[in-house]
Image 1 (cartoon, one colour):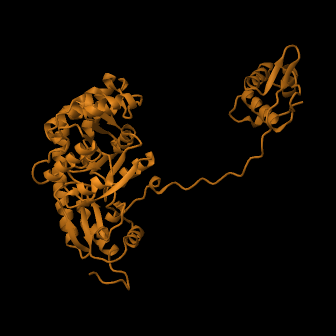
Image 2: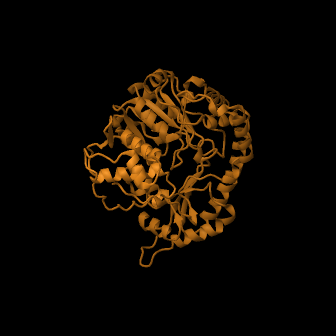
Image 3: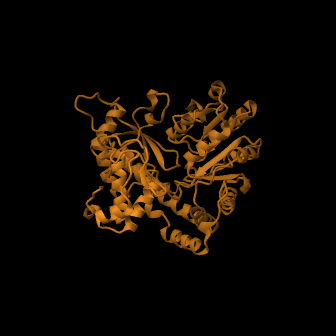
Amino acid sequence: MLTYDLEARGDLALYEYLYRRIRDDILRGAPAAGERLPSKRALAEHLRVSVITVGEAYQQLEAEGYVEARPRRGFFVCPVDRLSPAAPAAEHPAAPEEERPRAWRLDLRSGQVDRGCFPSALWARLTRQVLSEGGQLDPVPHQGLRVLREAIARDLRDFKGMTVAPEQIVVGAGAEYLYLLLAQLLGREAVFALEDPGYPKIRQVYAKWGAVCRPIPLDGRGMAPEALYASGATVAHLSPAHHYPTGIVTPIARRQALLRWAEETDGIIIEDDYDSEFRFTGRPLPTLQSIDRRGRVIYMNTFSQTISPSMRVGFMVLPPRLLELCRRELGFYASTVPALEQQVLARFLGGGWYEQHLSRMRKTYRLRRAAVLEAFSACPFAASVTDRGAGLHFLLRLNTEEDDQALRARAEGLGVRLGFLSEYAAAPHPAYRHTLVVNYAGLDVERLAEAAALLTEVFRPAEGALPPR
């Protein structure tokens, strides 16, 4: 007779505990396949529980295929694989470094923004409005909510001089998702020309998709057309307004040469307009898309730097020649940005608050940039600064001959996170060594003296090191 200690059931219902114990016994081979279980009444009397409790346990066993009921004969054990001895529990692998946030004393590598500039009260009010009206429940088309695409089209028209229809805009969860969409849209036969040095994730996303990537070295005006022609590329991914991380601005003559390349080779240009909103001297530069007359340019941008990196909202503008292809080939994808976020962002843009927010951010970052440049330029480790009056980063050439990896390791030991220009290059080059990419947006101006002192300690020449040239 099956015997179990029902007092050990804990919070489980009696039938649930009884079902689990009988199941485990069957998996261990006792009772064996074909063996008859005690009748419901007999087992109930033996265990001093109700017949209903035993009946519910037997019904669950039958539903899962452990036993079968035979009319007027009872319940019989079905053939099942016996339970193998449990393998020793494997240790869980350590979480990757990026999943274990570290409290850095100074972080110049991350593309942070000033959290104090985020319009929290307004954002909360707009969110409550959307929730009260049920906008978060609206169905979202593949390309994104029309109200958001209309707001983006107006913003591009008013501040970038772009004539764009809402139908051309595709909204997605950040730049990396849009890179992947574009790789699928342009096909596996596409060959991507990428700026070198350049943002590593662009290369990583395209390469993971299986695309061929050709690094194109930059000169002082951006991607060189001669190298682009020689590469055999069919797609050029570039940032003409303000390249990351070098800060190079592509002048009009070079832009026209790039457009000629696209026309002559039947190529496509992906204009990644990252960081272009933060230009502190002169008028905003016209986009490559706005001077394209042949439908060769795909325009991309995000709200990561202007609002928050955690928003993960970006968009691309497709030329008419690619729009129908996108709908046909990629229209089965669901939108990756929730309706609530799209509705709130649409109101933020449409109400004029985005323009006001950008104006405040430009003023804040202009002053912060000047303070950081002044503080760091005066330090003994600074050989020169490359400042192009735009963006939320600049290049700082170091007065050292030490290896970048050694400097990075020493910095991390002191709680300082650094990014070097050499890390952004697919093809190593001596010119990229000893140059920091300083992302300054998250720096606290009141702690600049402390930051400068930390960097001075990091870059203090090691004993026995060669003197700087």
